[in-house]
Length: 171
Image (cartoon, rainbow, N blue to C red; front, side):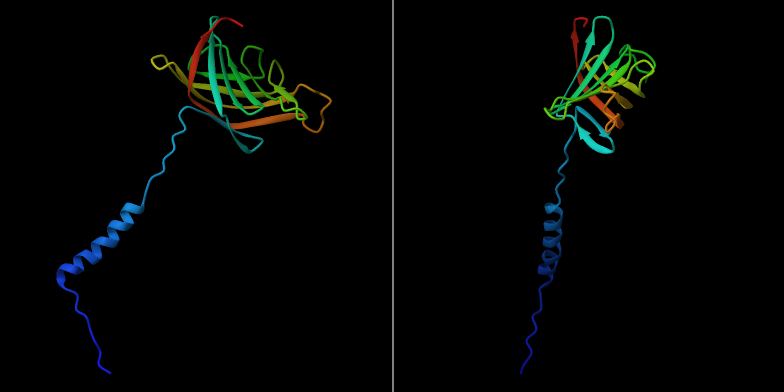
């Protein structure tokens, strides 16, 4: 039985190398998804990302930053919009809260004077674009003291990034 060998011309060898390389390069795509603006955290070590977020600056200078996910809401309140660290559990001016309004799962947790702990760190207030960025972590106490099954909620590694700020009347 005779053997048949094919000899590939030199010009075809280049294309046989370049064509697979081009296919490999063109098939690599970057599906980059920007999370800008963002409000996310770990709630009791489970990832939690707000679907909606907004910040309100009141005429008295305090700042309220809210993130909501369905029936759940995280609210951060600072005494001012200054770039600094606000400690929680010290007074009623800078505080954090979490609520769940889902029927059958109603819950309300907050920090306050000698209640809970944590911090809110404002890292940037962009006056030109009217956005605020920072980090937070806190442990909030259940407002229902009789609920021994769920006495507190922990938020760690919280980030709010370029959340739009609206100016509102004092409330």
